[in-house]
Image 1: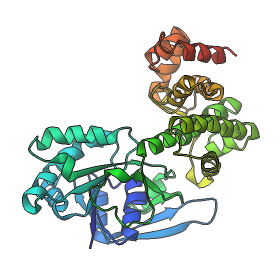
Image 2: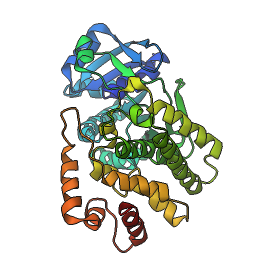
Image 3: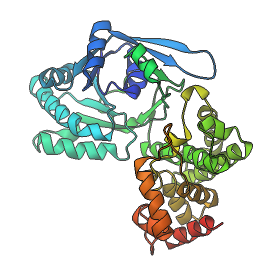
Amino acid sequence: MEKLVLFGAGKIGRSFIGQLFSQSGFEVVFIDVFEPVITALNRRKEYKVIIKSNREDETILVKNVRGILSSDIVSVTNEIIDCTIVAISVGQAGMKDVIPLLAQGLLKRQKIRGNIPLDIIIAENMRNADAFIRNELFSLVGPDYPLDELVGLVETSIGKMVPIMTREDQEKDILQVFAEPYNTLILDKKAFKNPIPDVQGLAPKENIKAWVDRKSYIHNFGHAAAAYYGYQTNPSAKYLYEALAFPEVAAFTKLAMQQSAFILMKKYPGEFTKNALDEHITDLIQRFQNKALGDTIYRVGCDLTRKLHRNDRILSPAIDGYFMQCPVDLILKTFSYGLLFKGTDDMGNLFPGDQEFAEDFKNKGLIHVLTNLCGLDADNDREIVHQINDYSCQ
């Protein structure tokens, strides 16, 4: 039987990557730090994925699974020796623990099996994750290991949204996980060293960078537009679907996403069609309104220092659009609404970094925030800064 070694038994790992491979006949071996989940996986050999939508719940039983604690280095590296493929879904913070295990496993695999390639699916929302992991692996396996010949580092674009689970839901069954119906894993077709696995739901793409940007410029940006304009329209709304229930919020969000999509098309000519992107936008807005997701305006909008940075979901398409002479007014309006975002959690607290962001904006002014927190350059980005200033004064 073919085997997937999956680093990360969290929500995306179980509800998305593990589910896809298990349903296509793979044994799935989860590697994780959380002992209760690993123990439960080894006892039950299966778990439930509950599909949450605006219709009746659907339950998928994911079978043929087991787990290994990441601290059991010998067992983890032995699994890498004879596996078919590896995947990583641990978040950027977890990479520092996973990469050394991968390096040891790759060296043992070569020693025992020779030069048999291994593909590693990087199921992370992380730009240039392939280059980052390659550099880290190279420093550990050394120059004598033919890394570029034996290891396929396969970037992905993760578009699946995972519903919020209450403590009661988690305590009821430690292994069950909620998921939305969307189940397409976009990945880098060119990065594979072996034939692409015959797994339903995989969507290999020739130009993965374009599809990673599609996630940021449309999905992530659309989230921001709905949350920030929705908060300005109705600060008392808690959930994203409540904000989008206001026609003016839904209309603004759609138009702003279309503006960003136009920039994406110009950046990657021939990769996308207007009709395809319009359908994608319509589908996303419907998914954003899935009440079963329980997605809050706070969660979608918080962490302003990251989400309002020049390399993230709003300023990145805005800067690209400006230099390609595309309209960017709705994108910059979204940014200006983000500057005023003060959404709070269930306890009425701002995200820790957002408190500092708001204080800096109030006490030190817009230009300080744009240049010191958002990464803009007062000279090179002066036109963008000027336009943001205009929208912020309206």
